[in-house]
Image 1 (spheres, rainbow, N blue to C red):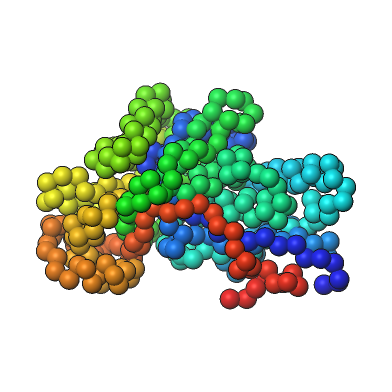
Image 2: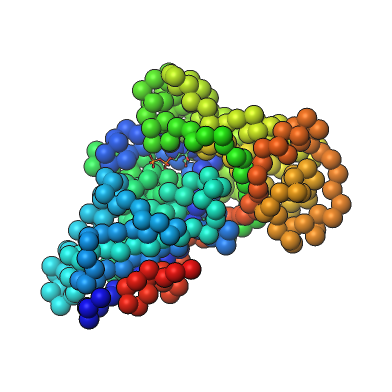
Length: 393
Ligand code: DP6
């Protein structure tokens, strides 16, 4: 390995699930969206990417990425755009201070791991690109704020820009052609409304559906309904959602969350040929949430679906018994329930009707109980050893 210095920096980054969805690009090269979006950052105790960025003059074979133990491509345009942006900022520092080591010219070795099963089919690209941007920025000692890094992570994957912050995060679409104002903006810290919880029903998909990258452009090109969505539905939902978060108004938060998910999937159905991300199990989850809300006599749960069949159900901690209890009652046999929740839910009654329960029992493979959480965290838990070799775990 030679006697050259090995430089390392490691960070974790969270997953986020949008409550007002990003769907559509106005510029595919810069990854600029057709509309603003807003998400909740989820706790890294349950879902996170852990990434070490390292560089050394002794590394041979160019830039590399080891993802969940397997070699991954770094030649893609999106990863290259992130590397290019970060290297340019480092090169500027080196030009201004010639005493700095020339890290920008060294090959990058990245090692990244998720703490959740890839098989869960949860979008890991958001956490992955956010961690990549943060780890390389730390490696290069860039004076970059989360907002500035969100401009870079956005070019890796749009939704990744929102994972640079914890709590409640907007991605402002911006209007500049160069994308310099299309970045993430923290609407509220997790501590503003820490009671927000999410129950994820992991639904096994028969086959991989249309990727979000290609699906959203098919929608942009062919859906008439989409025009209405970006012109008026999303701007209205953004305004109501920001107010709901500021006022910690769960009923308003929940209604926008469900309506916006429905609107997004309606534009998918209006795409020609149509795109279907939700399946019978997803639709059963919607009915189940409605039954849970009806039984409670108020809105205690809100569903949302991304580009796949998994249901994410938001609720407040005080309503754990009403929401989680109802799902635990029918899905107690699957993996993922937290011991603490299960204990407190000793006696729960049937809320979800039998036909719906049966579909969920057949189609839900596991659950994840989580909640709102913080942004990326720097750590010394390096995935590249001091001698430059990837850590075996
Ligand atoms: C449905 O961020 O995966 O999850 O920018 O092409 O990488 P690319 O798309 P991606 O799309 C996410 C779409 C979504 C909604 C959302 O997260 O806002």
